[in-house]
Image (tube, rainbow, N blue to C red):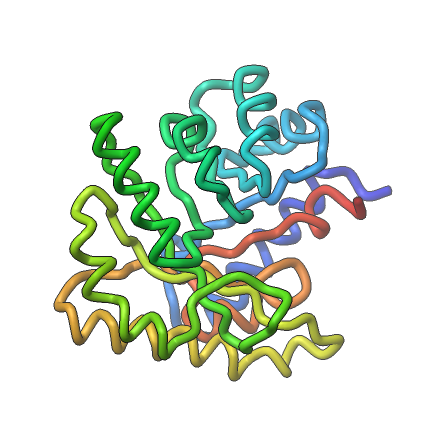
Length: 226
């Protein structure tokens, strides 16, 4: 099996090449290692290879793993957040990528107020209207965006989406372009910066970068199959 350091180096090289094709600065694109289900030892190997940003799907995995790893690591929650887990996770993550409804945003805002925190969040978009996935539809987000902005404890940093898996990554390009266009529209409407577009995973992140992604979520290509 290829050593993790070599796999991580290859991902970084592909990130740089995709950015160059799009005439973008590679430094404007962050690489997140999606470490869900992988043990602390694998994460430490990635840390030793220079990786500092990690994403987890479950609150309990972050709460279990983070104390066993270097304190300078950055953690994002990328999976669905239940209202009864908000209080536990808010102090421990840099950003919640998976705010999928106005209701959960209101819960986060209420608890953040109680804890005197100003959490950074992304709004999760169900960009292909898949019944099996969480997320705002673009139409609903447009309707509810002012309500979200009124939750002044929340720092809305941008949007996140997971398009349908396609064998040919090129097929996902329209979804990534749609997410970028939605972000641009919301920026123009609100006159607020929404700098983060979290889109692109192991099989399609190069297309996502070409369409404007600023944060790619890579798990299998770094850690191997689950």
